[in-house]
Amino acid sequence: MAETPVVASSADQADDNAAFKVEQRGIELIPDEARSMRPAGLFWLWAGAVWNVEFLVYGALIMSFGLSFGQAALAIVAGNAFYVLLGLASLQGPTTGTTAFMVSRAPFGQNANRGVAFFNWITQVGFEIEGIVIIVLVFEAMFLRGGVTAGSGLKVLFIVVAVGVQFLMPFLGHATITKVLHWLSFVFIAVFAVMAILIVPHVHLSNLHQSASWAVWTTALVVIISVGGLGWTENANDYSRYLPRTTPKAKTFWAATLGPAIPSLLLELLGAAAFSISPKTTGVTGVPAAFAAWFFWPYMILALPQLFAINTIDLYSSGVTLQAIGIAVRRWQAVIIDTVVVAIVTALVIFKGNFYTDLTGFLLYIVVWLAPWFAIVMVDYLLRRGRYDPLSLAKERGGLYWRHGGFHWAAVIAQLLGMAAAMMWIYAQYYVPSYVGPISSRTSGSDFSWLIGMVVGGLVYWVLAAREVRNEVSRT
Image 1: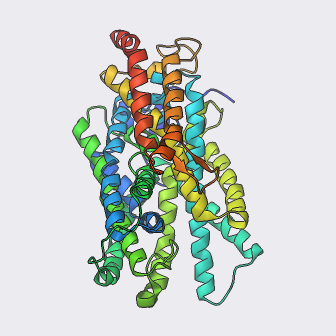
Image 2: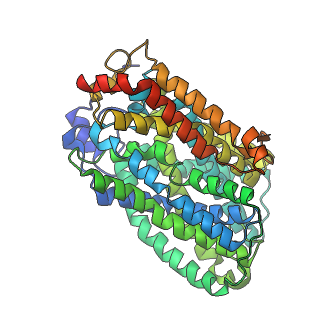
Image 3: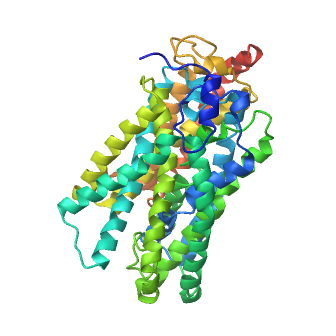
């Protein structure tokens, strides 16, 4: 297959800027004349993705750890403050005009970057599987409400239908995603308002005593950070690259920070409140059926487009990540590959797995690679004062970032040490694989893997690479 062009042709630009047409561009550099997004568009893209039933699930999920509502609310407020990381991770897109894991070539080098890009592909596919599983559970709940218990054949049909519908928006591309998520935001806000009216009057804030240990609370915090500000950083530049190069950095930062942070905070608090009223509440129904039975059908029907919307972000990013790894496929072909993979693994989870346990374990472990990667990319950005050579980023071989055969060993060492440090302070005793880091075991099971991973990864990269990166700036 012919190598993907570094910069898309002018003929492609009109199609790629039009909604409901297949975007031909993948990891190619976005030319200035094709960047039609505005900061408000970035805000609503993230808001539309996060006004979502999944974030109700996350609020209920951390309550299931044994937290009081007060503890859960504290973890949710503190965890959502980390959406500033997503804002910071969005700053390179307008400057370079390319995706997150093409920008990642600057600190890592083209070949070393394939490793962290592969970790990201696994992470994106994991989030896609989570969304499809919840969609299948919604289908099952709807049929059960109608008196039909889903057998194996019906579950397979649910999976096929879910991945078929999910395929459409990522296949069409960023312009369609941006427009549809903007429209859906307003629908989701209205649904949230109705749910809040149903739930809030039943919440009793008088009972805020501590019901779980500090160590358990840190696990809840890492889950909120993982699904929120840190967990979206690897998607950030995939969308901010469509902002004009001249976009003020402050506007990019606040659009990417507040767009997802506001709905995430509100929905997770609502999910925790729903769980505090009725611990039998699940992530599928999202509200206690005891006092909201009439709301079941409207809620479940509207939950489906919400779930498809958030999965769209992940499926688009997993496609361009496959290209960044070096697999010679076009963006829309990568979407097909990922859709097939998601369908197969979803079936394994539905028929064999323990979904909510597997989900928590997944969220805890992805931080191990993600925290040091983010720190390395941001330290590199600061060292080079935001100056990149986009043509070198787009080269498969050679260029400013080729260094030692496509490897920048300072970043590789920093990534490995950051991951090792994160594993020292992770608490995943009840998940697969079961593991407790030595620092966690000496601190009553606390989990600060995200913090120590970022600190070690970022500091090591700064010590090893500062002089070299500053020299590169003079050649940019």
